Image (cartoon, rainbow, N blue to C red; front, side):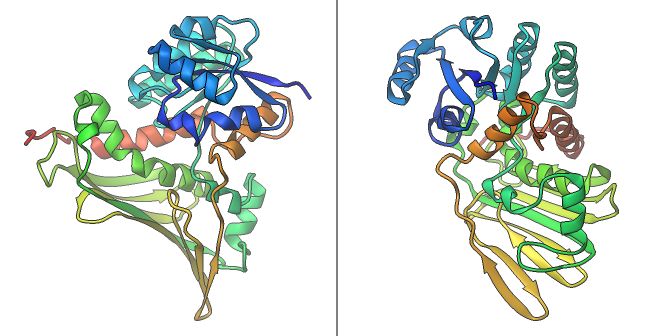
Length: 331
């Protein structure tokens, strides 16, 4: 196996624990250099994580001959530019969620990486994805006949959603375009997971609005959809509630599974009138299992389940849900 040498563009909060250490702790992987526009903060991150080099200019990472792949962990509105530059330099790319500002940017990023012989990759979801099988054949077997603790048989529907207290002052200070994507990013892990299990969404209906008037972007989104596999689904996301809550449910002909994509809560299996809870703790660095699949794929072993194509499909779904929404007044 070859050791994949990573560079990181953006080393803020998301890279501190969730992702950054995974690049130097994953098997056959090392983190060579990090970049942040604030050089002092980049230097501090490198010192605390034992990284050999730090930079305040992304080009130093993109052009480095001793870097094979680059993790982009900046704000969404810069993902396209950095990805195109990395692809032009022949680097593999791992992009934080959301992948881009809109589906058009996603397609451009995918095309650039394909032309360069690489692929745009993005995070799939929380560590609880490890409880669900990888590969189309394994997913079909799980859906139809078994799960971690027994069968729920033919899948009928999938429902999900999230409620958050109105506490997004930091988000409200961002640019209007960036805010809009940040507020719906809570639905990204769930929608990408459903794409992973049931295939693309073929039929979609939804509404988005600003119910609280606390900021310009949408704070409430409701959607219904049908997957290519025939499974029905619906979701509701409210960012102006009085409490925090996130839970999803897959209903089968012989039972149901409830799970969270963002919190380390037990998967709840209901079958034959019996309830069983399957506890799955978060690993220390939640990105590390996915990082390992990327490293393995770059080494020609296996296939990462999260690709630019799946990220683009999710971006397209989100774009359609927000079609027709007009930003309201800031209060």
